[in-house]
Each structure stands twice: as structure tokens, then as C-alpha cells.
Image (cartoon, rainbow, N blue to C red; front, side, top):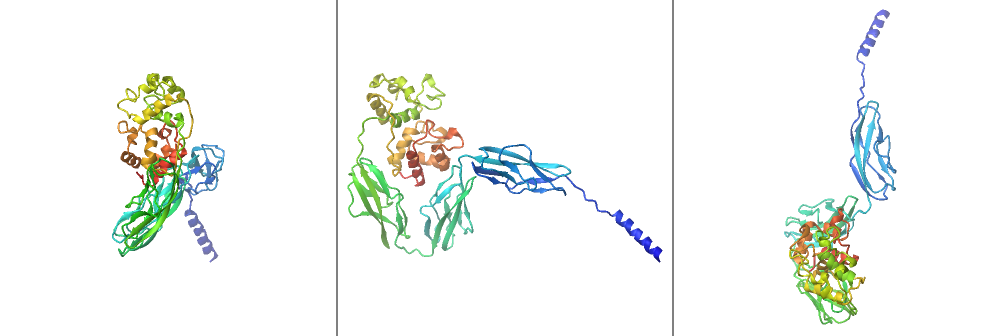
Length: 491
């Protein structure tokens, strides 16, 4: 009996040995970071996500193989890449290798450290709500936003009702006639390559078409300060019209020269308005009732003009119309003539003698060329006046009022003095025409408001796109153009 048991045990040992399980290790594969890159602002520390990997059945060690940049390191056990606040501006293509006892695999992680772009901020719709009747389609206004210096993408977050969408480029919210009755508090997110900001918009779809008294009536800005002899207009007011047709009027004592457009509510004033501060009362009425708001207009005495200023009145004309690429800038210097500074312009100007000033008498004859935009008679006369006053190199700040940003009161003059030399119907550099209202609006919409505002703020990705090339406009002038665009291009 004992003998039989020993034989069976020996047989089992032989069977187990013949079926021994052998574990085979392989080279690691599929080393992946999600996301594969990070873009951060200079001075911002951070880290990547933990990568995924097929370790080949063996423990792996992670390492960076191509850079010793100070401040960039990797956790050898987890593969998490870390960078400190001291990492310099630049793009870092970080090669990461994962190694086990059999072999290794590699991938690349990109770190962009940017010195100027920030996350977007101040996403605001004005007005921030709409009330419509069921069966009526429509859309919001474009929001105002600080883009942070980079292109933003808009999206609706949370539960988005059927029939409501957003333009990812402009942020305009649209709704179809199929949106059901209800109140929809929409969450809007604007994202650039650094971060994001949120805003809100409320859409009320009503079952009834009954007219109610208008509400939420306001101007933004709610005041203007001008010098005497300056005509202008307010921004278009915002209002909840209560589903009725609104008629606007001025009530109380109305100063001579001030009026309001009954259909739009835009307040206008002409050059005859006397000095003083006028607190205007504006009434908006529909068939159900009315609401009032106020607007303040301050008219100050015009300063005494003592002469033409070279820096703000003459230099921009020569730079815009003459010192262009291919003509009389430093690079091209056609005919050996450069017209981008006081010293260079004075090579062809004789103080107090317009008739002997070559760079004046040639204007309208052969300069600018007939195929290019021409200076207006008023601009030519201004150059003549400057010469007669002694052609001095005066430096001064141009008159600028950020509350004035309609096309007729300020924007057309800014474009004429700084841009039209290149961006006119004849040369239309890059397809942009700024010599008249319709062309200017269409051109800006075509290239995109972000691209245009980056150009005048000198924050374009390509320096050659910054405008005007002769030098950045003043912060006040840039503010005027920005307000003009953000308020719907008031004419």
C-alpha cells in the first residue's frame, strides 16, 4: 500500500513540472500623455497629467532624455512632468523615455511658456437677456470680452435647450422659432489656449403677445464730455421693449442743438450747443406705458488753438500716405526719399515757405502716386499751415475723448490720418479698406474683430500685422476704436 502511494505522488510531481507557467516580459509600449501639451503664462508652475503606458509586464522608470532646462523635471516612478515658475519663455519639446528590464519606449510632451497671453476675462452681454414670443427666432448681441491677447472659442455649457446654439467665433447666441415656452438661463464659456471665463445670458420665451410696459432702459456709457463746437451722438440705448414698438423722446428742458432719434433713442448734438452740463431725461414709451432714464452731456469751452502740432497732426499724414512699404519707408526709400520722421521730412521742407518745400508742392501731383490714396484738401492745407507756422517739431497729445466713438465724430478721422494711406479702395492692403464706413465695417467683420483689435493693440502673433506700421496709436484712440466695434459700429 505504501509503495502505491509513493508512485502516485511522484507522478503528480512530474505532471506539475511539465505544466509550469512561464511569464514573458516585453518592451514597454503606448506611452501617452493626455493632453499632449500645456501652454502657461510666464511665472506659472505646473505639471502634466500622469501618462498611460503598457509596461510590458515589468516596472518602468521614466526619464527626460533631451533637455536639462532648469525648472523642468520628471517623476521617475509616475512619469508626471513638473515645471517651476522660473522656466523662461519658449517652446520646450520634452522627450520622455520609459524603460524596463527589456527595453524602452519614448514620446514627446510640449510645454509652451507665453509672456503675454492670459486667460480671457470680463465676458459680458449687454443686454444680458431677451424676451421673445414663441415661434420667433432671433439672436443676442455680440458679447464684450477681454480675450487675454489670444483667439477665444465660445461654447454653451450645461444643458442646452433644443433650438438654441452659439457661434463659436463671435459668441452670438441664436434661437430658432422651435424653442419651447420657458425661461432659459444659459451659461456661456469663452476659452483661449491659457484658460477660460464664464458669462450668462437669459432667454425668456413667452406664450402671449400682450404688450407690457418697457423696462431695463439705459445708456452705456451714460454720459459724454465734449469741447464746444464738436458734434456727436450717444451709443444706442438698451431696453426691454415689452413686445411693443418703442418711441423715444426728450422731456423737460432740452438745450438748443440737442435731439433724440425717436426710433432708435440715439441722442445727438450739433456744434452749436453752448457750454454747460446738461442732465437730459429720455422717455421710452410703447402702447402699454413708458420708462425714463438720464444722460449727462458736458460741453466745455474749446481750447485756444495756437498752431499745428507736428507729432499728432503732420507726422501721421506722411507716415500713412508716404512712408509705406515699397515707397518712402526706411526699407524701400524710393528715390532715396524717406518720410518717416521729422528729420527726414525736413529734407524737403523749407520753413515759412510752402512754395519752396518739395515735400509739400509734390503732394497731389506725383505723390502719392495716382494709383494710391490721396490726401484730402483739408489734410494738404494742414501741412501748408504747419510750414507757414515755421515747420517746428512740436510734440503734443492729440485731442481725444473716449466717450466719443461714433464713426462720424472720431473713427473716420482716426482711420484717415493713420490707416487710409494703405487701406483704401485702390491699394486695399490685405483686402482691408478703411476709407469709408461700409467698407471699414465689412473689412473688420471679414478678418475678425479679434484680429483687428490685436493689430491696433500691437499684440498680433506676427509683428508685421500690427497697425499702423509707423507706430501704435494712443491708448485713447485704441479705446475709441474698441468701443466703436463693441457697440455695434455706430455711424
